[in-house]
Length: 179
Image (cartoon, rainbow, N blue to C red; front, side, top):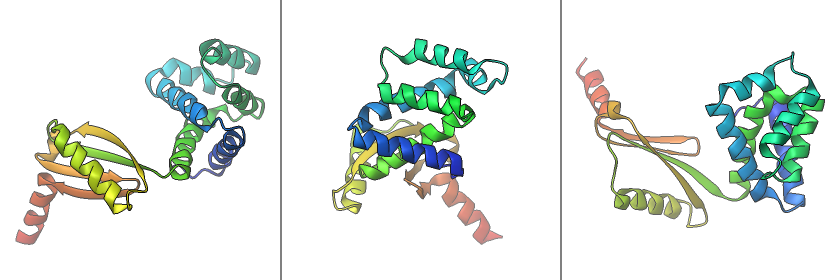
């Protein structure tokens, strides 16, 4: 989570408003889509950050792109960001919203990194271990990553904690002991 005061305040305000209106799940979907667009389309990011493009034009473009599928709350929130000259914080606000949403709903963000694709049984076992570690009270949202540099084993990140059981790390530790 990025702790910029502006992004945290806006993300918390959006979540609180969404909770009041019982629209937090729809806003989560909207925010995730915005984040995907910001990450994948450089032109979208440039448009938002450009001081040359008028605020009204930014709102018009954003509405044209998303008005058919987005919650009115999300659209109004974007208008407020533009009005307050905070649209350059949109990516960080979206990331913070997703973090606060997960915390509010007791969702554990788990990233499993392996050298090769693992079987469904391995991912299922990790999911069960994480759920058990939190007394089965947490929902587990899992992201799978492949990184051949780790050679073998797994790296499991649960929220902000990392458990590194990769061959690469074990080899590093052996190398350090031999020095």
